[in-house]
Every structure is written in structure tokens, then in C-alpha cells.
Length: 245
Ligand SMILES: Nc1ncnc2c1ncn2[C@@H]1O[C@H](COP(=O)(O)OP(=O)(O)OP(=O)(O)O)[C@@H](O)[C@H]1O
Image 1 (tube, helix red, strand yellow):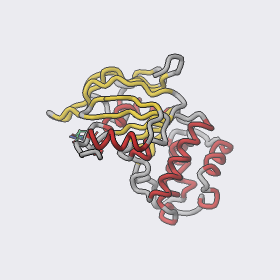
Image 2 (image 1 turned 90 degrees about the vertical axis):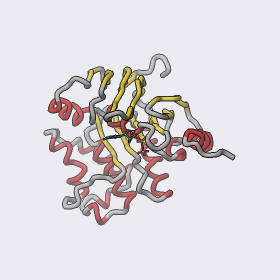
Image 3 (image 1 turned 120 degrees about the vertical axis):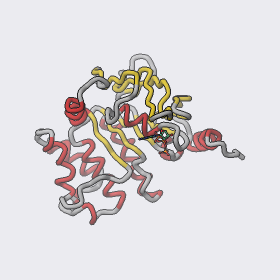
């Protein structure tokens, strides 16, 4: 990370094992505030495990994780849940919207659970940016996949989290909707100063981020500033053991 840039999430010698599988192997990494960082690598390289650890969803086997200056690794489960609600937002491949309530209720639910009154101006801005103004009273099933994911992004950002973690956010979308969602994520970072960490196996998606962390076998191989989709595709093919033309 460049000097003078604040790290919002820091992993210090983080490992995670499942039985005899080493999913994360002694990873030290910092995610800078106000950047869009992609995490890429072959299947099984530890991307999701890294995200789960960095997002305080799953404690590591060893090492330390600091979020906004606070070490979360040793927090109790209850305190960690509270901490996550206040500081972190999540976007998943499968949107995870509640099917029985309106989009409006979906996006404000985490705020209500945290006992926080919605900031109407901020929420309005997010809804407009995501192009969902006329969809708020609909049920999620009445929205397209792209619209559902954009609603999930509004929900993730509603409490103005310090970091948004996105795990394959475009994995279920067609190319056009995916490109739109990635553009919007990038705008949230560039225009509103948000911090986004996104796991993806798609070089084109990773290329929309500012920096890309490349993983293999549970380790960080590289952090590449502004790589092209072509460079990333070649790198990924090599790591996956495919022949590169
Ligand atoms: N809950 C678990 N129990 C056992 N092994 C696990 C568990 N979660 C992950 N692993 C193993 O840890 C390694 C890293 O998995 P992880 O899901 O982080 O990789 P990934 O890079 O996100 O893969 P993919 O792109 O296929 O989703 C793999 O070998 C996986 O089988």
C-alpha cells in the first residue's frame, strides 16, 4: 500500500485451516480506505476464505485482523455481530433479499435491526444512483437480477459502512447487468469515497477495480495496480494450469 494512505482493514499473518486443508496461508495484507480492491485467483485459491476473514464473518485459525483500528479477531461473537452491523456492508452473489417484503423494507431492514434511523437524504441518493426510485414498493421477485443486486447494494451502503465486502456480486448476472453493477460500485468509491473489497473469478470484473489482489494456494501472490482484463486473464489461466496462447 502506498505511504500516507490509511488502511481500513489489515490482515497480519492470517491463516485459516479446515482439517488438513490450508485455505489461507500466512496472509498479510492491507485494504486502503476509499479504494475499490478486487481479489482474484483460481478456484480454491482462498478468495472467499479471505473475504470471510477480512469481513469478520469467520475468525481465522491464527493471525490478527484489524478493522477501523480495532482488532476484531478476539471479539466475542455478539460483539462482532454488533461491530459488523455498524462498520461493514455485504453484497453476495445471490442478493439475499427477503422475498416477502418490499425493496424499501429490504434496504432499511439492517438499519432498523441496528436501531439506527435511516438518513433519508443518503438513502435517496443511493436509490437514485442505483436507478431504483420507481421499484421501491415492489417485491424483490418483481425486479430483474441486476435490479435486485442494485437493491442489495443500497442495503449494504444504507448505514454508510466503512467497508463493503462483495463476494462474486456479478456472478449471477448477464454481461450487461454485470457491467452496470460494476460501474456503479466504482462510482460509489470514486464519487462517494466508499471502500469496496470484491472477490471475483472474472478478470473483466477485477479490471474495474483500482487494484487487484492475486491469490493462489491460500497465499497472496501480488497486488496489481490497475491491471487490464487481458493481463488478468493470462495470469489467471497460468495459475489455473491452462495453456496460454
Ligand atoms: N467450510 C469449509 N470446510 C472445509 N474446507 C473448506 C471450507 N471452506 C473452504 N474450504 C477449502 O478451502 C480452500 C479455499 O476455499 P475458498 O472457498 O476460499 O476458495 P475460492 O478461491 O473462493 O474458490 P471458488 O472460486 O471456487 O469459490 C478450498 O480448498 C476449499 O475446499
